[in-house]
Length: 301
Image 1 (spheres, rainbow, N blue to C red):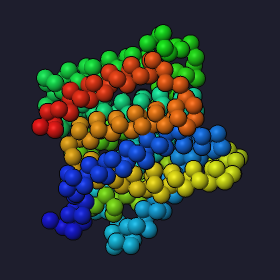
Image 2 (tube, rainbow, N blue to C red):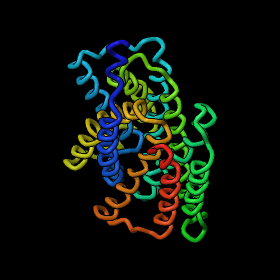
Image 3 (tube, one colour):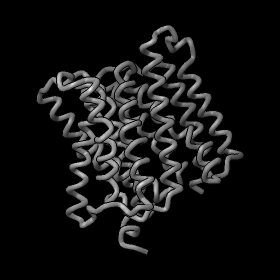
């Protein structure tokens, strides 16, 4: 086993600790992003996160002697993560978050776990039967509750657009999770991370300049703190940690466990920026978590 490959793998216990850190940091980031979008354009915000996060990760990789060109076999995952999870997911989330409350946005973005179930069954051969199948059906029912006509305004085009963008972001992340799980990477997540951020930045920066320009930024001490939080922590550290966790734990377990992020995000959005905890969101989330429980029980055993 090469050094790069060995450093990419962590024990299940450490992987769970990394997952907990990601849950807390990404959960808190939903209300932070909502506030940040009041002072910066969505694509500019995403591009800035990629630049700051990538720079942070490049420094860490250099200090640990892992800043090097990826192996040719790893370029598919470099482009996959850079395009799907970083540029695609974050760009779509920021666009949707403009029209959707932070708590609901977190729930929709993390329906990723639901879409991973059939993808992992079809592409990785993971079993889809019994409790896992029942959990998937209940999770889909939870998504349906989120869009019931009594708790969702189907006549508001902005709301429809925002919710649709968030669901598309979730699907892109699901595809990425399955791709990474099925790929035997030769480099470590730390050595690949800076290049993944570079791919995302090369996509997002021109789009942001073309569509939003620098006028979309209204500088303030608050925005500086938000960008500092989003760059080194919520982006640089969390993306590296999530890729590491995805390699160490089963794809479905990893993605479904990450549903703790919207719970944290919804609660913190209610506490910090006063978003209401609606019956629709709570009921939908409860069904989704019920599905998660049914799916995860066989994994834990």
